[in-house]
Picture 1: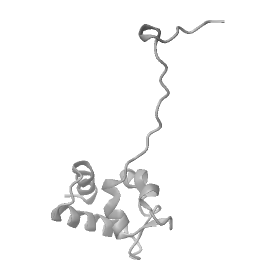
Picture 2: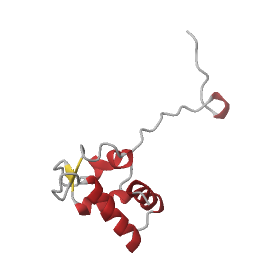
Picture 3: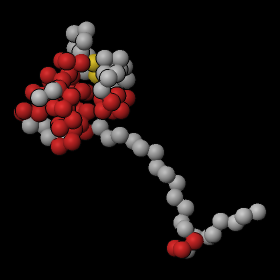
Length: 99
């Protein structure tokens, strides 16, 4: 199984089983290109799921993910901007006025 697929499965299922942890460790090691024990944003650049969650997972704001922070990626929620909804005229809102 490819490391990317393993993390996606771990993220999707939210599981922290022994097998998922091993897959997470392998994935971390594959991204840690310089072997310093951290994954930087540059090292994670080709992995959109990691990049989307990077800033929120980087708890100490040092610009890199430790193994512990990386393992917590599956618990990090991605914020999506909410659309502003206006009630329609059919459900009690007002109809748009053309001036």
